[in-house]
Amino acid sequence: MAIPRKPIPKTQKQISIDQQQPSDARYGNPNMPIPTQFNETGIDFNRSTKLSWKDDTNKPFSIGIKDIDEAVFYYFQNVIKPFVYQNGERRNVPIIYAAPERWKSFQRDGYYRDKKGAIILPIMVVKRDTITKDRSVYNKLDANDPNLYASFQRAFNPKNFYSNFAVINNKIPSKQMYAVAVPDFLTIEYSVLIQTYYMEQLNKIIEACEYASDAYWGDPERFKFRAFIDSFTTQTSTTPGKDRLVIGNFNIRLRGYIIPDTIQKDMTAINKYNTKSKFIITMETTSNTEIFEEGVVKTRDGRTRRQREDIGEVGDISDVTRGTELKNK
Image (cartoon, rainbow, N blue to C red):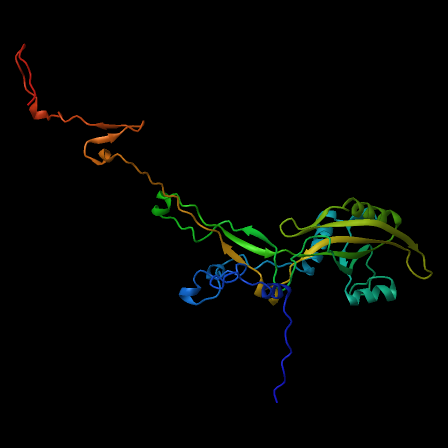
């Protein structure tokens, strides 16, 4: 016995379309227009919107949580560049991500050790805590059928090949656009742990991080997100039998966005399209048929002028006696 298939619920758009009744059955539903080539080809979609990605270096746009994490680390390593002075030398502070294995070592020993078991100080540890959806900003409205898009223009469209016909007729070239569904906006919380030997070293790191607050963090050639740092906490640990440790903590509140690379988005969203090309052909009309006759020209003020017919040749020139009357042939 066949197992009955569970019905798939309709989306809000499908329910709305079912409630719409056309005023004339011959024309159908005006909100769902039939493609112009349906009667000729039987294809129920517009083939002009199905553009190939072959030999296209601009692949479908997507951005994930990993890109946001990389933006935070890029800003720490290439812009803030935290450093301290240790024994009269300037030392860059290493920045690591709090992987589960590393975080377990911190919780157990209170230090981070290298492969040889040596304690690494000073150090900064970044850990992602929470991801919260921000609904105060606009969104795509419906994941099953995105309604809002952002368009990006390609620098060169291979369809605009050069030809004399296009030049003569003032062809306006077609532009190739990439349509990307608007992203989901998020608020991501990061916690940062700083460990140093002395309070003076910790102060220098905190000063650099506080100055970078409320700025856009990330790689200028990729993605940038605005980051906020509200408060810092500091403490000094002097446990008997262990090294003196100065600890600082602060949280980063970063406002980011994601466009996931999912099958659902690829099936419903518009990816690439071409704008309409245009030919400009000028045409003049006239009611004066004389301008089409031989020897008649049109002046700038719109009047016609007929050329003189008494145009001779070089062989018609001859010497005559003074006082002789010349007559036209």
